Image 1 (tube, rainbow, N blue to C red):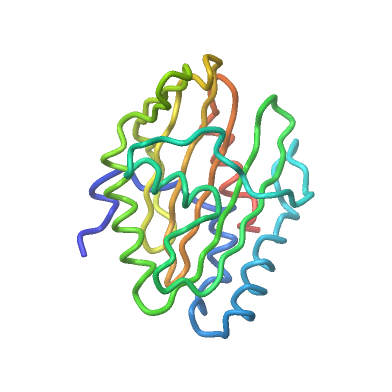
Image 2 (cartoon, one colour):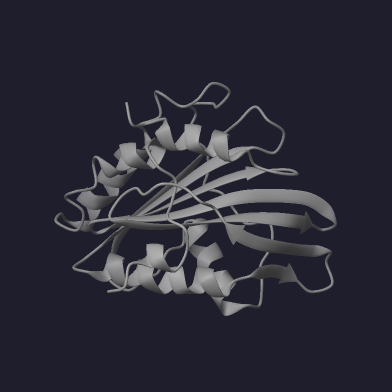
Length: 209
């Protein structure tokens, strides 16, 4: 398979995800209930979250809008804890609130049988590359996507920076998709006018301890 990293800039280096990745090598080997427990356990690895982030595990991030573009919606579905269903064994998602206005760090994990995680990330990478603009007709909601240049993590990864207006008001988030073995992971880091990529990197490094 052509590596997704050749299509779009690869995802955030180090940590928060790297910490999850350290426990992902056995993905796809247990019963669904065991996989669910394993993924939930990974989401509890929040002891080293950056200063200003609550260690309290909150509900998964919910996108504040939908789009009629199939490529864009496929990516949004995955980012909100609804990953592709084919060969899905288990999934889990959570978010952590930051102390900056509108800031949330959201993580989603999905475990797949066989090589399905690789195939799903390839498809999602193509969808992400095709999604140049997110818009909801007649609502004042429109976003532009741009590359998020970062170093590699996991077996392969993709990342995009999303900026624009939600119902006429500024809104932004950084989106990272990562595959490690049979596990597919998402990181969404939200803000109001912009999201500091350095802060995103802090999040990515949080659970590498």
